[in-house]
Image 1 (cartoon, rainbow, N blue to C red):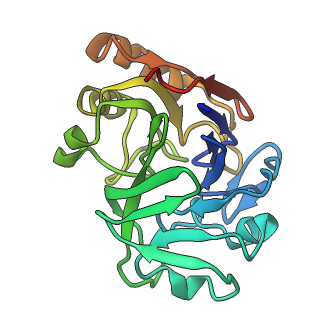
Image 2: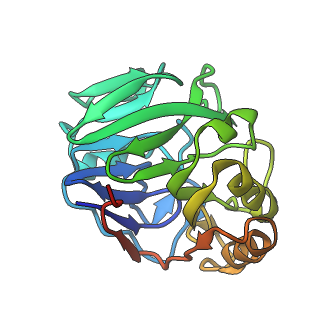
Length: 244
């Protein structure tokens, strides 16, 4: 059946893989705390499950989850369930766990990032996810480079964060150069930059493509075999099933 990947902005990606629909870190509103986007994102059609990488407000947005449906299955890091009491189907997992959703095998993997709910939340691990079916797709969430990245590839698609929401990219994130280095470990056929140009602080322009373009330039130097696809918000990449 193949894969259909639609970037809805920031870290929100709708993946249809072998007929199973998964949505990552849905943040669909125009305003999140002190962050703004130019317009609200389209609510994706009802997925088979939602994957939440960590508890930061720009990744776990309760009103956005409510828009998708309180009975839609959620796969979240261990310790996150207490924030989701209104949701009826929540599964907590940790790195190394595997969840079968439809025809897709979802593997929880390490992410080097402080994923707690601020300002006073207890430590909760951040996750990445590898989706495996007729294609393999890695969603990094937020992370630094880590040694275990080399064990995740090779992959068909890497959904790679390349920026933050402010002028600097702090610990626990990838900037364009580090994101390009990640490709040398992950060895994806295709890389799609995410976590850029969608949300910004009031008074600062959104829609800045420079992080994604810098990532593509860096990747051309250090990982020239990787096909970097920069999607606009709402843009889609379609892949046939891999040859047997």
